[in-house]
Length: 236
Image 1 (cartoon, one colour):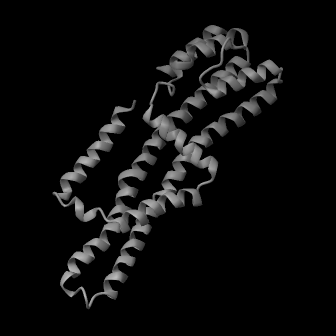
Image 2: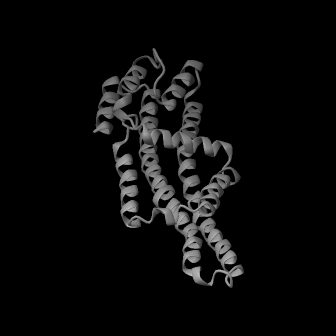
Image 3: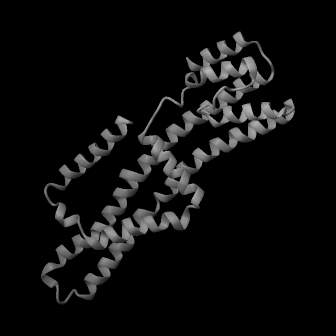
């Protein structure tokens, strides 16, 4: 489990709770929550293709259940095993390694091997990038939805202004809660999650590039000792 993620999340909730100074009930407005939260969920399906939503969910899952699989050292045994036989006794935890083993099993020639492995590497990196871009794009919508909610609240306020002359301040405060929720979801939830995913995506890209270069050494029938030294240097 990623403890820094939970510290940040609950820390933000604590800061928010202390800032409200006991006026939480003022912000809990059905109209505001519906248009911002409900609208954001609707826009996810409206603006993000199904594969993109899948990549977001996978990225969020990996973010919560963090592991050491972004380290080259996690695949040392697989690389060394491949350098000896170009075959795996059991599947690796990384799809690029499994793909290389499948290509060798099929007897692909060297030039085609490099082209196919390069394409697979790019595809894997792109999948991780999709989740980051989707969250970044999604973060621009909650503030806009919040402004829509505020405008709707203001319209209702002005419509009934004569009959609510003594409660203008309260009605205006209620209308502004939609803007608050929009800013909160964008800047305290979606953007931080996108930034965290971006950090993990950069690490994953570095791992894919390292594995790609090591697999090219294996494909070139370089000595096992040289490949082990390369793994050690990249792991360090």
